[in-house]
Image (cartoon, rainbow over all chains, first blue to last red; front, side, top):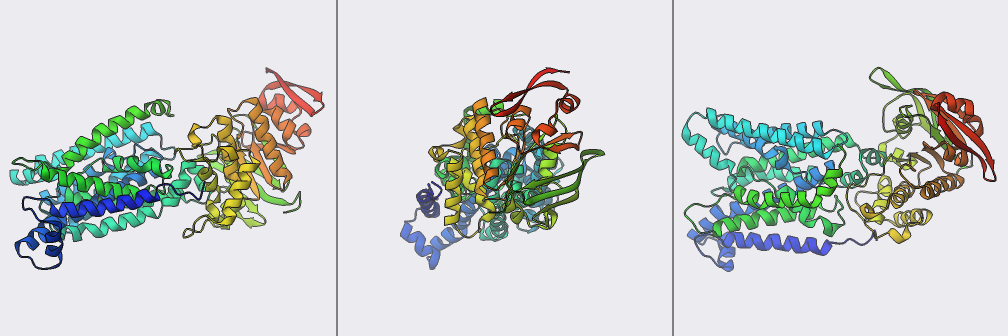
Length: 336
Length: 261
C-alpha cells in the first residue's frame, strides 16, 4: 500500500556499501596499508603513508564517489523527465560535448587543467548538448526521436573532439587530451576535488528538487501539468542540473559513460519504479559502481593502468544491449 | 457539497489560436455542479484544445473562471486542486503499483516535507472503492487491461477531490461493457455534486448518459442543450456527415448510426 516504502532497507545497505568501498579504495594501491593504518594516516601524520593516503588515494576515492553519484542522479533525472529507462547522459553526447569544450580550453592554452574555466567550459558544453536534446525531443519525448537526436549530438561531440586533437598545437597536448578523454581518476589531487565538488553538489540539489515532478510525469506531461507541475521549469532545471553535474565531472575525470544508465536500472524495481524514490539509490549505486571500477583498475596487474572510462564502457555497453533486448517489444511498439 | 446547478467552471468567449487558425473560436460553456456535460464533435473540431484550456493548461483569449476566480490568477497547485484533468490515452510510463498511481492525484494537496496524510489515505481509498479497483491496489499498472487502466486513471483524477473533472475520451479503445461502466462512473460523480465534462466520440453514449451535450464544429460551439435537443438528426447529418435512426427504448432515446452521407 501507499504507506509501504519498499526498498528503504536497501537504501541503507547501499549507503553502507559506499562507505565500505570508500575504505577499500583508500587501502588499494601498490603500497599495502591496513585499515587501521589508513585511518591513522588520514587523521594524523604518519609520514609517507599520510602522503600516499591523503594526497594520492583520498582525492581519487572522493572523486569516484562524487562523480559516480553525479552520473547516477543525472541518469535517473533524465529518465524521469523523458519517462524512458534508456535515457543516459552519454547516449546524448553530454560527456562528449563537455569533454570537447573542456579539451578546447586546455588544448589551446586558455587555461591550465586546474583553472575553474575548465569545469565551467565543460558545463557549457554539456548544457548545449542536453539543452539541444530536450528541445529536439520536445513535448512527446518519443523514444525514436530522443535516441536519434542523442546519436547525432554524440557524433557532433565526437567530431568536435577529433577537430581539437587535429588542431592541437603540439603532439604532447594531443596525447594528453586523448588519454584524459578515456576517463581516469588517477593522479588527481584534492584541488581537483575542490574544483568539481561544489558544482556536482549543486547539480544534486537542482535535480532532487524535481523528484515529485518526475513522479507526476509518469502520467505524461498534460496530466502532470494538470496536477500543478510546471513542466517548463522542470525541463530547465533538469537540463541545468545535468549539465552542471556532468560538465564538472567530465572536466576532472574525462569521459565516463553508462553509469547513468546502469545505476538507476539496477535499483528501480526495488522502489516500485517510482522515479522520485529512485534518485537517492541511483546516486548511491553510481558511487558504488564507479568506486568499485576504480578499485578494479588498480588491482588488474600490468604495466599500464586501464582507464576507468574504458571499464565503465566495457561493462555498460553490453548492459545497454541487454536492456534493448529486454525492452525490444515495447521499443517496437513505441509510437513514432 | 455545493448545490446542484451551481456554476463552478465558467468559460466566456474562449479563443485559442494555433498559428493563424482558430482551433477554438469564441466558445462559451459553463460546468455546473451535479451535471455531466458531454462534448462531441468530429475529429479536429477543437474539443481537446477547449478541454485543455478549461483545465488551465494552455493560454487562451477570453475569460475562464473557477468559482468566480480567473484561472490565470490561480496558482498552479490551487488550480490543480479545483480542476482534475484526464488526458486522452491514459499514459503510465513506469511500472508503478496501482495505489501509488492513484495517490498521484493527491499531489496538488501535498506538502513537500510531509508524507502521506490521513486525508490522502482516505481519498485514495474512496476513489478506489468508487471505481471498483481495490483488488488491484498492489498490481503493477502497466500489466492491467485497458478497462482496468481506464478505471485507475479515473480513480487518480477522483483522488484530488476537485470540484470539476474534465476528461478527454475516457472510453476510447474500451469494450462496450467498460464504456458503460466508465460512463456510469462519470454519471455517478456528477450525481454526487461533481461538475463533469467528458469528450466522447460515441453519440449513442452521449445521448444516453449526458445531462447536456455540447457540439463543436470547426472550433465553434454549435449546440449546447439537452441531449435530445442538441443531437437532432438534422444537426448530426450536417456536422458529422452521418444519418442516424432514433429509437425509443425503456432506457430513453437511443441514436443508431446508419450510414455515412
